[in-house]
Image 1 (cartoon, each protein chain N blue to C red):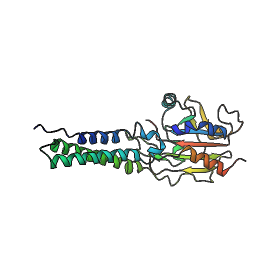
Image 2: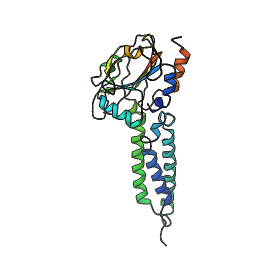
Image 3: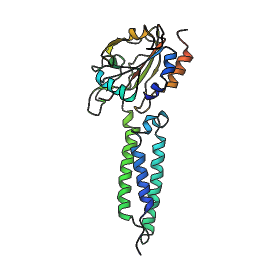
Image 4: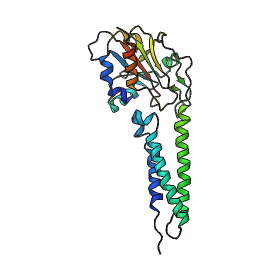
Length: 111
Length: 152
């Protein structure tokens, strides 16, 4: 997520919103965002409504047994259609900004 | 004659500790060392080799080097800790749901209505209908959703 902040200007230049979603409360997101210097949007889904709609619920996935989201990334085009998906197999392996930017440039949608 | 402290045993043990302790606070911050923890595994290997060398000379030349007892204890501790580390990173980290029903490429992205960090309610439609903040773009060309585990 840090790496997406580093490349945020590349996403902005392409007109792509970068949005992070988790079960964390808005206050937690606000604090976390300020602490780490993130400037993109953090959405809060404590009831896991969107997380379930995207079939990403990880029941009891938090160390304290709470339900959380599994990691996943979706690139959506301006018509609301999904154009690229990354469903990792390990929590330590996440999408890199270069992959997403490359996918966007190759698909060259919205032209 | 006073027996020598077995330095390679202790150095090896410290390197093993560094290899175990540095993943989360440091190496996990960089995709290159996070996706596959080669830097940590390298440290563990170097530490392990040093410890083996130290143990071997402790047993082969007990009149010169110390470390038969504490060396064995450190070795057992290290093996257990390395086992846990490998289990966590290569097994436990993969115990996540498959998400077989997740929306696929070509499908409409499910809409959502969620509060942002300031409590302002945001929908996917809102995001699509305005460019990223500060870019002066009227419409978005795309939205990247990053679902993450969170900080609880």
